[in-house]
Structures are given as structure tokens and as C-alpha cells.
Length: 338
Ligand code: ACO
Image (cartoon, rainbow, N blue to C red; front, side):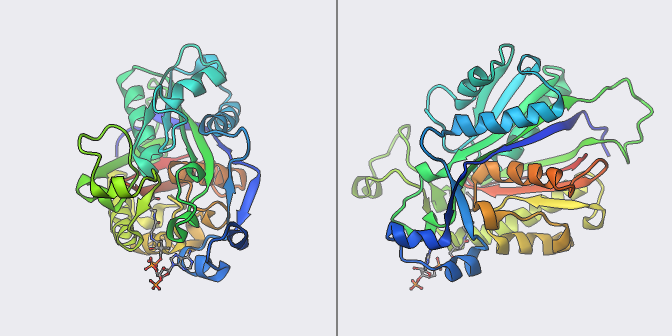
């Protein structure tokens, strides 16, 4: 087992106040029912960004809370990594808007695009920057305004997603403390990332950079909304999240029995149950809030982690498995001791 180089010093979340319940879809002209949505996904309601709320503003809310809990000032941040599939602008990165909003004058800032796995990708990149000595204190935020990119006339996708942001502050561990027993050391114990771009067509959204963008599909469908083959995505999600859970556990030389809390990407409760079963982790050790927030893409694990800390589910000494899957496809995981 490796000696951890970085640890989670603070967590935070920023979620809009506006709640959209399953029952509210009727008033939007969407033909669906509460029972259908709950049975297929476990979702009861989700949050929607309101007037004046952006990916950056939700990210800033989450970031300020994480920094406060970590005892970190904006000027202490060396790097800001922002994962999003819904940047406020394509140029520049939303991370620099966040850097300005926080007044983090010393911080380098950049976005990561790896869909729902992006926050774990971001933490992995941040851990690498800390390991190399390039940075000591890094803010990693996952922030998504999914309501801006879902097709509100497509009942198969619009019921799934929600808006919000989750954040952590990562700090370098003190390498001079050689007495640490790695078995009990706190910090990131293992990380794992994978992708398969052959499957990109199963979940995607058009943009301006493609060399051959004017296919029949794009010409006839002028919408620039998310397109998803739900059933196929479901199958791959279960398979890839199961693999990711195995790899992170192997990397930390642990089994499911050693995990105190599993916090998976909150896309669908059936995907979560299948992943937990594969990893031999009982559902009472799995943190689930997809019922209240829907799928907030790369914000979902950060929001859930912050709630789990606040509710005492994750505490000092807890060994936590984080697992994600998203468009790309991408998948990722890590084991973190708090
Ligand atoms: N309300 C009522 N009926 C609906 C709705 C709805 N909101 N949406 C679809 N239906 C209907 C369909 O029209 C279809 O009707 P038909 O049989 O008459 O043609 C029927 O329900 C079944 O449709 P399916 O798409 O086959 O339903 P399925 O059981 O696969 O559930 C779902 C759909 C919930 C999207 C499921 O496939 C799923 O959860 N997939 C994973 C999606 C996901 O999690 N994506 C994100 C992961 S990656 C990331 O987070 C970016």
C-alpha cells in the first residue's frame, strides 16, 4: 500500500434552492409519472438553478464551504480544478471565473471534461500535482447546470438530471511524519481511471469543434441537447463501476469488508445497488441521495460526500470508496481515508 501524499482537508456543496418534484413534470407538459421515475431510477426530486445561478455560482458556494471547513483562505490555493460538462462559457474555462469569484490570486485554474467521472479525474490530477511538488493546496470542484443542456421535451432524459456543485480542498501530507503506519494513514490510498471513446455515441452532446459536424443527425436535429441510449448506458455503467470498485480496492489492498462507506456516482439507484452488490458492500454502507438530487453528473459524488460528512456517516478514520461512471465512456474510483 502506498503512503498517501494528499488528504481531504474539507468538503462543501452548493445546491440551488428550487426543487422540481416528479409530480411537477405534468405542468411542464411531460408525459410521465412519479411511480415510473421512482421505479426505474429511485429519483423523487431534483434541484434546478434559478435566476442568476450559474455553474460558476454553484461552484463558488461549494468551494467557500469546503475552504471554510479546511481552514483555507483563497490566497492559499495553488490550483483550482473544475470538472464540468456545462461550462458557463466554452472559452475561457469556468475555473478562471471561479478563481476570480473566490479572489484566489495565486491559483492556476483549469477545467476538466470527463463527464460524470470528471470530479474523480480532477482529484486524481490534483493528487499528482501534489505528489510532484508542484502544489500544496488544491481546490477540486464538480459543478453542473444540467438543466441548461437537457432536452426538456425528451421524457427519457429530462427526468434524470439535476443541478448542483460539490467540492473538496486537498492538502499535501507532511512527508516528514515518517512514523505513520500506512495501514492507518489518512489520505488518498488508491486511484483508478479508464475511458472508452468507442462508446461515445451512446451519450453525447454536439459542440462546435468537430471536423464533420454536419451529419444528417445534426442537420435534422438542430437541438444541442444531451442524447442518450439509456438502456445501453445502464449496462455499461454497471459493468464499469463494478470494475472501478475492484481496481480501487485492489490498489489499496482492501476488500469490500474494509470499507466503511461507499459513495458512488448518483445516476440511478439500480446501478448503485448492482455496483455495491458486486463489491460485497451492504446497502446500509452506501450513501444514496439520488432520490433528492437526481443525477448531477460530476457534482454528484461531491454533494453526497459533503452530506455524508455533515451527517456523521463519514468521520475521522472512515475508509471511503468513491466510484464514478459517465459519458465517454469514462469511469474512475478511489479509496480515501478521512
Ligand atoms: N416516463 C414514462 N415512460 C417513459 C419515460 C418517462 N420519463 N421515459 C421513457 N419512458 C418509456 C419509453 O418510451 C418506453 O416506452 P415503450 O416501451 O412504449 O417504447 C418505456 O418507458 C421503456 O423505456 P426504456 O428506455 O427501455 O426504459 P428503461 O427501463 O431502460 O429505463 C432509464 C430508462 C431510466 C433511462 C434507464 O435506461 C437508465 O437509467 N439508464 C441509465 C441512464 C443513466 O444513468 N445515465 C447517466 C449515467 S452516466 C452519467 O451520469 C452521465
